[in-house]
Image (tube, rainbow, N blue to C red; front, side):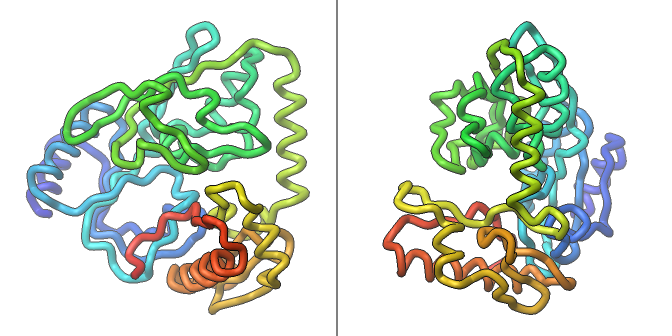
Length: 295
């Protein structure tokens, strides 16, 4: 790790040895990180990934941290935080955005030019790279609908994935094995973008518990056999608690950090919901949350 830090200092790449997952995730939990690197240039990111691959140091990529729940145990590797690798350009009805650009920033530019299909981006607390990896979506729109191509690092090589290469499925894609560098998005020009986005945001405010730390809706049904949050409600999970974590009384798909919850508390509740729903419904229930350092 010392050699990596020495290289970071020489390159002038921002980094920290005192960061915690609790400061980098929307769930506000998780322990110390051995080394956090926050590249601001694509060239530094590519050099860093090459160095990490050569040294064999454990590392993970982090965007906005809105679907990550980390253990309270120390993480002995490197977290590459992409949230400052940001910037975007519009060309006609397309927008190219670096991976760390927020979805809201993309929406704000799209709004100026009436680029329809961008509305749901205003509701996502995510980076555009992270949103592409998990095929994020809401209110009937997903990243699969607007991604034209993605620039990635895979096996140490720079590659371009077309939409079909991404193999988008519900809340997943082939991008999970890559490091997203930039995303090219294609929209259609249509009036009413602002009004549709405002409707979505109001629905989100009405239906979801936005006043407490969370990682969004934690479960989904991959085979379409049911709506996971409705099944969790039917089975009585609302209000269930473990330590400082609690299933929302407003939306049974949300697990909230209500009182200094540990990552392990949240993991227990989500695992209990996941296993129970699979058993009771017979459906392919999966978690949208990425757990770090858990069993």
